[in-house]
Length: 239
Image 1 (cartoon, rainbow, N blue to C red):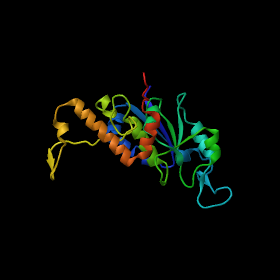
Image 2: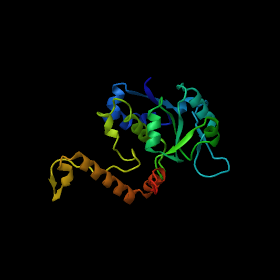
Image 3: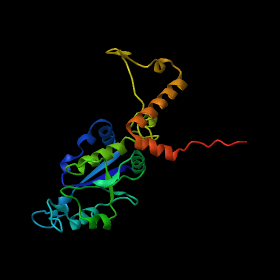
Image 4: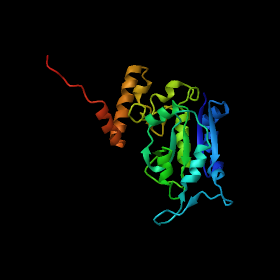
C-alpha cells in the first residue's frame, strides 16, 4: 500500500508546493508516495460556501465550523488506522520519533486550521491529534503540514539514496548532528579537522559522537536532559 498524505485545506493551490520538487517531488513522481488535497469549502452547504463564523463568547477573528469540517473529514476515505491530525500551535511538538511513527503507517489525514482556530467540538468528535512544529504562530496550517509531510516522506523506503543517510541525523539518537565538512580542505584559513582525514574509522566515530554530545548540551539542554533520563549511567557495584 502506498503511503498517502491527505490534506484538508482552504487553500489547495498551496500544494504540492515544495513537496513537488527535490527528494519529495521525485518520490511523488515515482509514486513512492501519494498526495490527496481536499478543499474544505467543497463541504460548505450555503451559496456563499461559508466555512467559518464568529467565536462564541465574543472576540476577534473567525472560527472554522465543526459541521463543515465534519463533512469534509467524513467524505474522505482513508485506510484503517489512519492518524487524523490538526496542525495547531497549541499541539504537542512534532518530534523525529513521531515522524518515524507516521512514516511507518498508512499516511495521515491532516486538517489545516485557519483564522482564530477550529471549533473544539470537531477536535473532540473526530479525535484530531493536534501537532505543532514550533512555538510560533503561522497564518494557517498549510506550511506546517508541508513540513510534517516532507519529514515523513524522506524516511520512506527508496526516497533517500541510502537508508543509512537518516541514521546519524539530528534527533535520530536524541542528539543533534555532528559538524559536517567536505572539499576544499582549507577555506578562508579554516581547515577540516585532521581526525576526519586520518582514515581511522573508530576515531572518526568517536570524534563525531563527542561533537554531537557537545552541540546538544550547548544548544538543546532540554534534549540533553531527556537523554540523561532515558539513558541513566550504570551503577557501579562492589563484588
